[in-house]
Amino acid sequence: MKQFQTVYLERDSFRAAVSEWQSYPAPVPALIHLFSDGADPADIASACAIIDELMPDAVYVGASASGCIFDGRVSTEKLVVTCLFFEKADSYAKACYFPCEGPDLSSFRLSLRETLQQIKDVKAIEVIATIDTIPILDVCKILQEEVPEGIPAWGGGAFGDNQFKAFLFNKGSELHFAGVMLTFICGSDIHVHYEYVSGWKPLGYPLKVTRAEGYVLYELDGLPAYQIYQHYLSIPNDEHIFYNALEFPFAVQHGNRKLLRHALSCDSQGALTMSTRIPEGSVLHVTYGDPETIMQDVNQCAQNIADFKPDVISVFDCFGRKTFWGGAEATREITPFHRIAPTYGFCTAGELIRWENDMDHHNLTLIIAGMREGNAKEGTVPVIRQEVKNNESTMTLINRLVNFINTATAEVMEANATLSLMAITDQLTKLYNRGEIQRRITERVEEKKSSPDGANATSIVMIDLDDFKHINDTYGHQEGDQVLMRISRLIHEATTKLGIDASDGRWGGEEFMLMLPGVKKEAAAAFAEEVRIAIEKLHFDKCGKVSASFGVAQAKPSEDADPLVVRADTALYKAKAAGKNIVCLAQEES
Image (cartoon, rainbow, N blue to C red; front, side, top):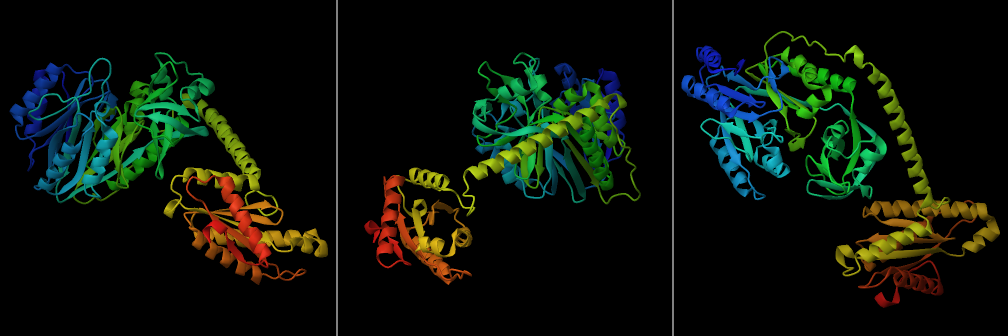
């Protein structure tokens, strides 16, 4: 692959540049990118007309940007044009636009499926979308499902603001404002290696999304979402909230990785409109941008790309990162890659990448894709590490303070978790205490009350050690405690082996209670019999053998937890009256 770049300033100089490209000997048509950062539409049309005239077979695509990558830097040029030549006879590119208007994306899925069937030797897909005007997460899901596994896909969102709408275009088309542009990179000897860089660090406590709808985040931990910015970071809810909150995005756990999400605006009630949907129940962390960590990640990524030895490098850099660095200073992220191979790309309104086969929408992310034809060239590519400037050394102090905050937060959370566990645990047996096991039974019975059968069945088992008072009176309470602890371990191991999220607790004194979700009375009674036999086989140094009696009951339709417990207790009483050391079902179920 061979890359040439120029900027459109006026027709004559651009025509001269394209004329030079035209003379380059290449076996197949070129792929051209036109990225516009506020360029006049007439200039875009003029550039396309010159390409059509001088390179009529060339494939070209374009998009609006918030800064274009030119000559290895984030440029202020309004229209940057990059020409990529393939050097293998069977290499080629094909650009296809897919409209995605409205929530129904079935036509997009069908068109994509048909296109993939027609195009041969697809090795990679570059994705550019009008992220703000389409259901981008649904688009990502379709790409994930329809594009064969193992084909890299990456790209970003065309940029738009209150001055101009985000747009896409390709050869022979008008500007598109709601859709996806896919550029298929094809050939028998195309190779791609791509990575993404974040660098934002978590700060403070995890937060749970307790109310969200679509792109609107209403509540975190039951409080207005904006309060996290107001209370902890003193960010006012004014016209600058977008830029202020951009420095502290949320990290959302997604599988085994975290995705960054930032707030776009906030209403008077404290609801945040986010860059993409965040489902209820998600766990978030506020994060902050750390220049040192960012550049460490950039340098490591550069080394990995250099080891791949690409011919060209595709760059999709979030405009939020450009804002974080301060405009042209964002070049420091791009320079290490341009020293490896020629770069092209733009600053995006969100990034798209397929990683471990999941196609995701990212924010505040830098995506780097190295491409080459054929085997890697011999020799090594030197990587010049880009370091944080000395005038940013104060970040070292900030990092230490943040580390102090995060460490202190983790210790407090661990202490709270320990206290919470102690509050629901019986200290002698380490099983749940009566309050917790009773709460779990009540919660389960209420949840399945309308139809407590099959998978919704709930059975409880009440256990009482036989003649336990005799053990305490004869051998002392220390021996009695040993009996309770050993039998508790036996019960817990048995319920854990069931693998059904069963709960076991100490009901009081020498009584125990088990809650078995999804288990009918017959199976519960059989399990109780196994536990009974296991207890009977135990041997203690002083008291020798012990035994236990069991009462089993299954919840009935519309039955509350208290009557269910009473029925189990009655069954246990009958087991005692029948001679002890037996399992008895509640009478209504016998």
